[in-house]
Image (cartoon, rainbow, N blue to C red; front, side, top):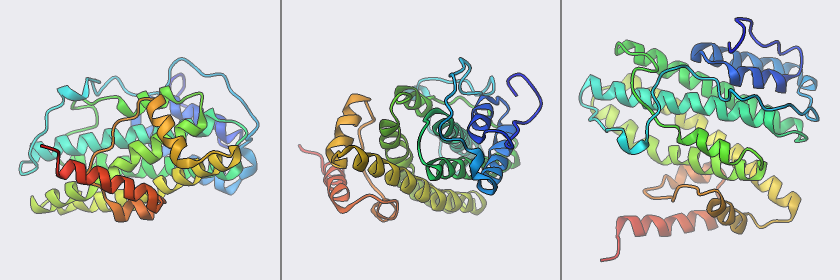
Length: 284
């Protein structure tokens, strides 16, 4: 870990354990600890301690020296017909899942005085993201590579930093914006992998999409719960937060079926359909 080889002790405060795991630099250890913490927390939810508050350390998030983090525009796309191209893709997906572990753990330790169910939800998400990372790492190893072998970007954690003081913004802009983009991207990637004959990698995408629908649903549920608690309209509030925190612009095509399953309402889907039409039929 950042200062010790000893795993965090979930028999103490589970939210403090989440912070320790967030600081873990070694990816496989972070994934294993995240899954263990979820098991421990659901067995003893009284150890979550919602009222506890912690000082933020200056070494967040814990991550290895590699991959090199670069601007997204400098990352080159490669075709999936070659093993080299698929290795780059798998690495990019592993990087997303590694960051997703960090994002879920950060929600657990950072925001006090939420309900027990809030923390259990995000501990479950962390554990499932850890499972995804493990699956992708194992598949990447079959291509002769490891996480860190290719450059990556830091867009997911940058949004976590922007929303670190506002749990409503975090719920609006990480699960239901950034992670929801994965719902749209996953089916075409899976199709291309299958067309290339890489059915093992395609099967991992099936697991990820199934779980990510649940993760976005959790984000939608807590976003709306927080809006209800403050008497806010979720649609106008989302637009305000997206502008305030400079969320990426949404672009189609969209996976409307998955987004509906993930808790987006019909008004939101109609708005996305308008964006999708604009994307597919740009004005002359």
